[in-house]
Length: 289
Image (cartoon, rainbow, N blue to C red):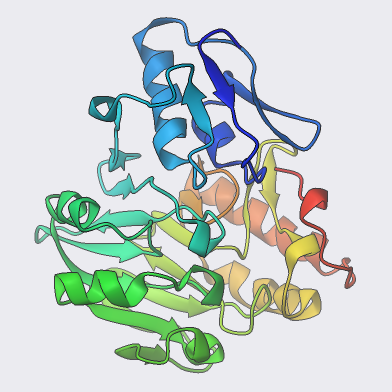
């Protein structure tokens, strides 16, 4: 409306609505501008949506957003930045930079590949590792790892999506990545899905679970579970008692922060709910963001 619109390339991925939920809503199965931004804060939120959108579908009437208003990478907390610039080749997934105490950083999943963007992300800290949560988000992983001289990680269950990975996570046991950072295999969404946990504070959950604005709670996207919802339920039941974090930072779906004790309670409840689910046909329109 007014100076902004969403073009017909929109895939209803929800990315823009995460950044500007008061300005962009879902109407008839796609994003739509609800109203123009009011004030600097809302203008920043709108431009975050603009530069995260994987199809670049959110546009001003002029057709081109002001590049100077690109906010990415954007701090979510003092230890995590969100990369923005989501890629169509990762189904529009969010990606993150985890900042470490020694001044280095780790990239979790990947934004679209662009050398200028790669330099911009590296300015936050020398990237030592690129951590892939699962096969759907593997695009660009090798290019970013090579650009940074970093190690590329993936689980053996999804190794065919990144066969040149430097580090392969095997089995179901947690794997230490570095001080304070572990990989927790969680098969279900895909055979090789992995959570990355950092500092008892951050959970990079890939597509294993997310925060649903519609439900106001943790949720699984059972309608887009590629491997096995029963296996996902078993994975959550096995791991939920031992996972401790404040932030859930998914590839798809919203981000959220709660006290660690409350998040643990909600995760255990999610495991119970997931155990009641049964396989269903893949249906992207059924996800409750």
